Every structure is written in C-alpha cells, then in structure tokens.
Length: 174
Image: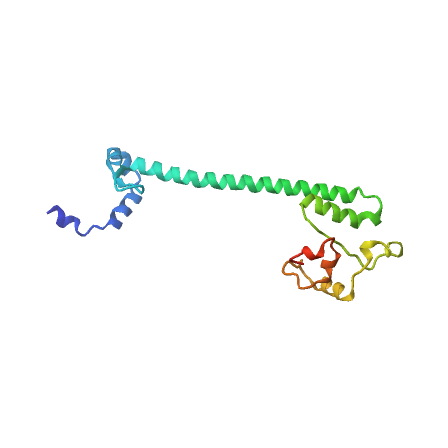
C-alpha cells in the first residue's frame, strides 16, 4: 500500500519539498550521515560529507590555479610597468631634442628586449632635417603611415620601413 501512495510522488516533488522545508535536515540530522553517493573517482559509495569534501577540494584546486595565474599576470604587469617607467624616464631626462628619437629607439630596444627598431620623422624644423631620423621616408611610406589607424603587425610585404633597421634581411614581419 505504501508503494501505491508513493507512485505519484516524483524526485522533483521531493527536491521541491526539501528546498521549501529548510529545517528538515536539522530535525533529521542522522539522515545526512547515512546518505551514500557514488564517488566520481570510482564505483564505491561514499558519504555525503565525503562527497562534499571531494567537491570542495576540486573547487579549491581550481581556485588555487586561478590565484597562481592572477599572481603571475600581476607580476608580468609590474615588470611591464617598470620597463615603461624606465623608458619614459629616459625620454624625459633627454635634454637635447635632437637626441630624443635615438634615445626613444635605444631604450625601446633595451627595456622591452626588441632586437630591432627604427624611427623616421618628417616635417621637422630646419635644424633637425639633416639628422638620421629625419632622412629617407618616401611619400609612399608617409602615406602608408598616415593611413594606419592601428599599428601594422603582419608579414613583411616589402615595406620601406624595414630598410630603416640595422639588419633588414633578418626581418620576417614589418
């Protein structure tokens, strides 16, 4: 007769009852200790508490991995900020404006470990027009530079700017 009475009750009904009756397990605490669940690490049954501990351990491992990744990213960000600070400082203490492009490139290479870098500036004042950084930018290079809304990163399609580097034949991208 009991089975006939329970046939209409579903697992959903039981779950809904337990959700809506929060004091149930407080009044029947001995039931929690006797509940057995399948272990995800084998075919044996484990207690509810043991299963919860396994789930918490897995969650803690995941959180620990995230924390380690966040720490590593934070350390990388600090290193980048320090490099940027040193680069900016070198630019700011450059007293002679004619030396600024050379300092900019040298410090960029040194601080950010860039093997090659170059700079060309056009439209400079008369006293600076004979300096190396103000030489050799064709109208095509100027047009390309002014057309870019973001820096170009990709295959070297024979760009003139590559020839501004110390070793242009070693460059695979422009």
